[in-house]
Image (cartoon, helix red, strand yellow):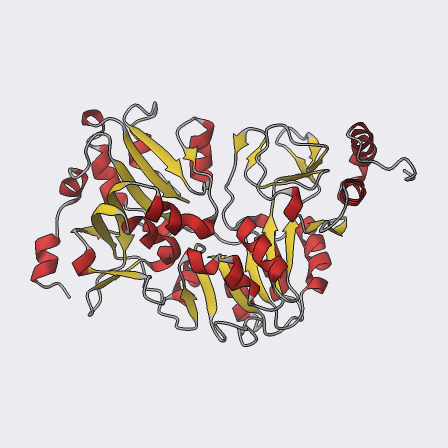
Length: 443
């Protein structure tokens, strides 16, 4: 529907980039909504701009404003949740993490943040004059509610997804339109499960009942769990997740995912954002059985609590003997983000029959062959994602422990039993020094 209004608002990427002034706050949206043409045009203005602050998340790169400005003299970039590309930028001091809970992202923008220019990639306009946010629909509208200027970049590769009104923006609410983008969608297949992943899945799957609704977080272990669940004998599972990956397609193709037993959104799979491979994107295209909702709905613990037998499956980097969970950093090195882990941990704990699992390998072997325990005595600069007061099920290949309501000595005993055997004596000595080891306990 390229009417006179469309033609009047149509501009070049260079004109779109000229809207930015030194000192402005600019938004690049998320993942598949990355505005590649506008980014490249803005990078061309690098030397004439200063103190331009850009927000985004899960951008898979390359981001040209950062590639052209390695010292960060002109552009400052911050991310709500870091991709592998953004993590490397963090290592160089070129990306700064924005602490957040995903359910609050609309609130942050609405109440506290400035956006001078928002660029967002969208699917081509439809017959009603709407541009669809595609696989970033759960978050894309957040920054637009405060943006002084909105530029949509039409990406021919972005398919439409079904939502409930926030999955699109109408042409009347758009200031400018840029055409010509054919930026490819991210290709992030689920990782094939390792033997350790399979063992963890074997321990977790008995805790999932037929008719349960599941959430899978970002990471190799949740991906592997999804694949293993697809090969299980479970039936009539539901989907309510901030992040939809290929794992859910595997569940659907295996006949495991029906959404028939959900208390709310019955018959519907609900997600916030999606990233995976071409088959996943094609599956979600105009699929009225799987809908995108705003993140302040998907991740709302009250909403999650209304779904019986809700199972949250997330991963982490490490857990200390107090039960604190770190999913964001390794020491002071930034890795990922809070995302929805706390949201789903809270909501699943409130669900009738619900459970929240933090799953991890008990140890890690680095590129030099040095093996370390992921269960540690205490954190040294590691960012705490889930506090010990909310600790619930922790799973490794050595077992599962429910830390809810447990004392410090009980937690220490349970967590040490989940660690790799070669580290247990050392962890016991640390627990004794930290005064969280029972004198009467046998080693």
